[in-house]
Image 1: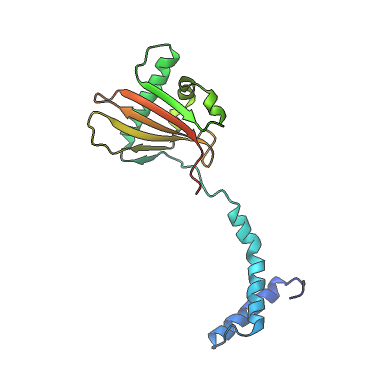
Image 2 (image 1 turned 180 degrees about the horizontal axis):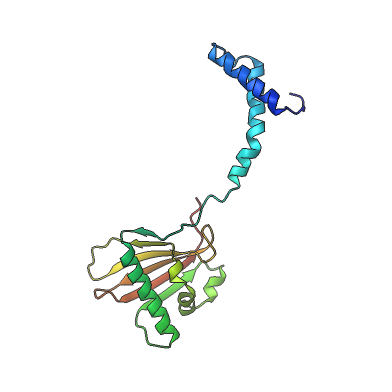
Length: 179
């Protein structure tokens, strides 16, 4: 093929010719048909590349709930925000608070208490009830991405006790899954 450009009109004419030849029993043994297909692929390449550069993950407009309803999720978020408020006010809180990250990340320099207080629980985008056989402990998994989806995020496990009180909050700051 020479480096000549093809006008949209000649491309349309070639496409119509190819279609007619295929409808009337033609085959792709003719080299012109293969040239046309290569040319068509090259013409569509910018459109395909621009589609690949689009952000593949859109931010959910509402919380993603798994295994619980909106009122249960709201109650859980309320308990966490209440615990944050009490910690800020200096009140004693008896639940376990654990946080960590990959050693190279800056978040390892932040104390578990400070990390917990930085989380905007109203912006948690996913809440899941984790099935358990233990009636005394009910774990939940929350996902909070402070910088948006596709970025580092907090994977948070909250365990409620038999009376619905917070027993443990374990937070891991980590990269998203690679897909």
